[in-house]
Amino acid sequence: MLNILSRAIMMSTPLMLGALGEVYAERTGMMVTAIEGIFLMGAWGGFVGTYMTGSIAVGILLAIFCGLVTAALYGVVTVYMRQQQIVTGTAINILAAGFCAYFQRVLFGIPTTPLKIGILPKLPIPLLSKIPVIGEMLFDQNIVTYLVYILIPISYFVLFKTSLGLTLRSTGENPEAVDVAGINVNRVRFLTVLAAGVVGGLAGSFYTVGYLGMFTSGIIGGRGWIAFAICFLGNWNPKGAVIGTLVFGLADAIAVYIQSVGGGTVFPNELIIALPYILTIVLTISRKSFNVPAKLGVAYSKED
Image (spheres, rainbow, N blue to C red):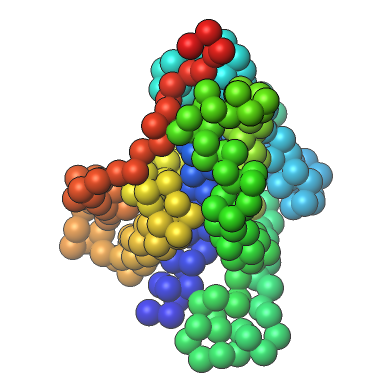
């Protein structure tokens, strides 16, 4: 049970990063529907950077850059060219999948055995990691998971307790008022999308440099969309995102555990793998009300 809970904390790390970035972006009115592609580009960048240089730090930096570039493309098309966000995000997700598959083949050919890289080591915190039960779960993780611990309270404080957070929330609720106040609405939205790209790229890299130590074209497997759904289910609030992320992380960890102990002989492997996605559908259907930002998905220009 401790192993499952510890793995659940670890598996929730990239989902939390992606969900927090999505919460911020959607609070300004931007649905970052390219999140699956951003995750994938981050995973690929993390693998390539680490494999080519032998440095996990370089891999993470390249992953962040790949996520940033992908988000910038999405932001330019949707914010400044005012194109439909869902269609644009879908197109970029397809583009990212093709890009990664093509350049993975160009750089590495068709290896006879999977290419492997080192992964982030666990960093047990002295004394705290020795606490019974919660020590192994919370304080024997890698550095990215610890970073998430720090980001959660900071993200809530900034969004709801600062003037910057008020600007972000107002941009998604009443952009005309923000514009009248002399703040460039589209610039706020674009910069927030870029920020979501940065944390999304880092989240994607977690699957290669923080967990599996390898890259495949299906490595993300829809988890970007799960982070997207967590934003909705958490009611566009970092607190709700934390709860949703832990639930999905636990489901993912249980699915991995069932497979590792031979549960596939009792239940079809496909059903086990689908557990987190089935949970997404069930929770979405069961949610009664959503506090949707008023201008979510609506492009803005002064002429409106």
